[in-house]
Image (cartoon, rainbow, N blue to C red; front, top):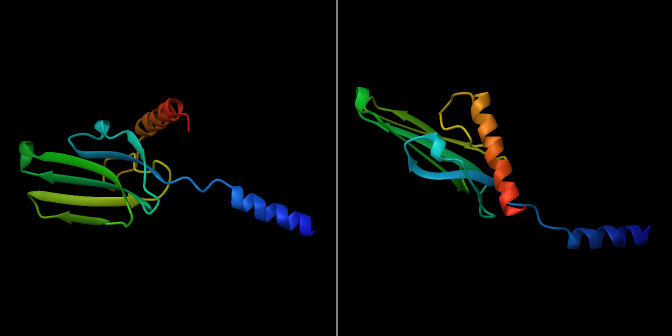
Length: 126
């Protein structure tokens, strides 16, 4: 019994630490199609954040999207007519694939994200 306990303690000490969260990242892009770059987050980061903002009227609206890792969740939804801003959070592997706020992810977008993830893993050898 003591030998089993010693073996378990040794295995726990030699075990590889848990991998950090991986999120999609981009900065101030016009389209979600530019936001499929996966990145390992820092150890203290617990959330993948997606922000979506729009400024302007009618055809002159300028949508912008950003995605990043964060230690906290700045979830918000603000709409003042000529400008809107929303931030959504999640905390699982590559969970911030969608660029739309409060819209379910389509199968095409999900398939694209899975393919991008697979290519990333194959390229980096994780």
